[in-house]
Image 1 (spheres, helix red, strand yellow):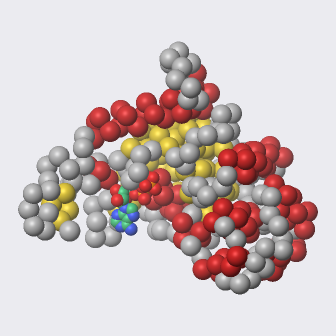
Image 2 (cartoon, protein in one colour):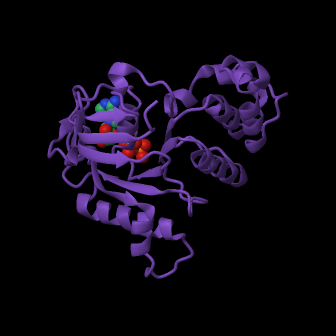
Length: 277
Ligand SMILES: Nc1ncnc2c1ncn2[C@@H]1O[C@H](COP(=O)(O)OP(=O)(O)OP(=O)(O)O)[C@@H](O)[C@H]1O
């Protein structure tokens, strides 16, 4: 198999019937990297991840994941964990954890299964109809990750985890990229416990990649920031989002007056368009 790298070449995608989407994105995500996708709500992170996962059709030649076009060729070894995966109703039924893990191939990877059960602090006697949200999420993560992926696309799915579980989980992901030939792209708003985690940062704004590069480069630039108690990554991202908001302006500056109102949507700003609801 080709090294798990992701190349995006001038990718533009527009949602059918909406002027929203992402524009002119070019990126190169090296094998064994851990890339954070950063951006305000609506910046285009989920759209990009779903395109990388082959869940939506990108223009031919714009995306290459481990040497193949994800939509056309299907992606062996690529795991995408996002909202629709989280909402899968099976994990709310009266089913046991062992059974669930078996159903996703856990028995074929017993060492990995047991490792994930340990890292995510899962009790295999749990019934899924009688667990907390965070416990359910931990089981889901074990289910999603038990097969050894080579490219992992994560759309924030750790929101329900307690601080320690999330820290352990992030450390496990990091270790994976150190001991195996694999690559992670992770869209998140939660920057706790991420110091030293990302190798690369991608800053998205209004459907575009505003800047991207190695984490060291960006974090080096923030070294002189006044300390606020935030991590350097937290300060960097706060600065980015403040600047993005300033440039975009309030969402409703030209609107909210009439029946059947016309409103400016952040994501449309990049296209210079408005749509009526
Ligand atoms: N199904 C859809 N149809 C039309 N427009 C959409 C659709 N999904 C998202 N959009 C729009 O596309 C833009 C990018 O949305 P996307 O979900 O990729 O943002 P995001 O960066 O993941 O945001 P968040 O941080 O809130 O998850 C937004 O302007 C959004 O309103």
